[in-house]
Amino acid sequence: MNVLLFRLVVNGGWSNYTIVWTECSNNCGDGNQTEQKTRTCTNPMPMYGGENCTGNASLMVQHSCFLRKCPDPPKVLTNQTQTSESISLYINPANSNFTSFLISCLYLNSTELETTSTNYTVHNLVAASCYNISVLTKFHDVVSSQAISHRFCTAPPAPDSAIVTSKSSTSISITVVSKYWFDVFMNGKLFFSSSTNTDFDAQTVKITNLTPGSTYRNIQVSAFYQGLRSSWISLQNSITEIHLPPAPPSSVEIFAQTNDSFSFNITHGAGIFDQFKVSLNGIYKNFTADVNSSFTIAVFGGLNPGILYKNITVRASSHSKYSVPTQPIHHSTSKLVFIGKNINYYSYH
Image 1 (cartoon, rainbow, N blue to C red):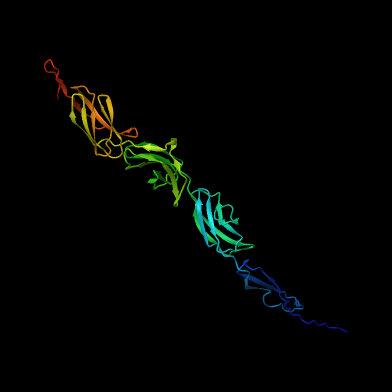
Image 2: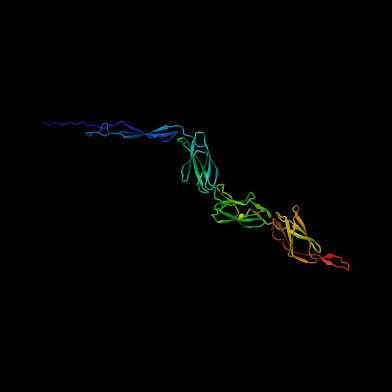
């Protein structure tokens, strides 16, 4: 007797979902989290030619999430001072809900710095460089979702050197070695500002239109970059002041002579002076300038009668510095005339 066995076809059925939730995308404030739902075709498994389950075995659903309120980012971020290697920051918090600040400085090896103070100095920066600096507020274990960011720059390095190479009655030439633009200050005032980079080549600048016979003190040079100034350097060789020679007299006239003297009318030149040096035939005398007038009367006595004095020149003097001489002039003293046995002195020329 033959027995025929018949098996019923079993189609597959889905199991219940297994659900896994991801963490909220933010640790404070609004965020997103994902519901991951998975199931298997095992309830039951397909058998005896039964069909597999239809539909997706997994499903991901996005949900909004909200945790405690995030701390506010700082209200203000400013730089108080800067050097060629550091930037000093002031962080003004939005409110009292902070325990520290997280500082990020682009291009800095240390990507995040933490401080509990509202004043912080970032070190080990490159001179004459700009950085994007961002600050987050941290309140215990939560951090603000936004940062305050600003671009700050470091100051340039000071010029390598500055030395006076020449001077005249109205100018001073200074050779400066600096990679960056630079300013020259004298007597507390700006006298020169460069407009081109020098790439460490020595650049000689000529400061003109100065006052003859004047004194310039506190001569300092500094580099500048992005509106920031380097530290100051002084002139080499410990030069603390420069005395310019005065301008020569505008004109010199001998308006009278005797047998032993010349009377000079010295018309003043420009600038500052205190004396005039009158020179003739290798002898000279100094005369105090009449600074309250436009000219000075000087009487040069002790001369010999009837002598032609050549190369008579006058120099102005200020702080023991002398001007160039005036154009030489020639003039004779009066002669003496003897009449009879009694000696009578007459002068003529």
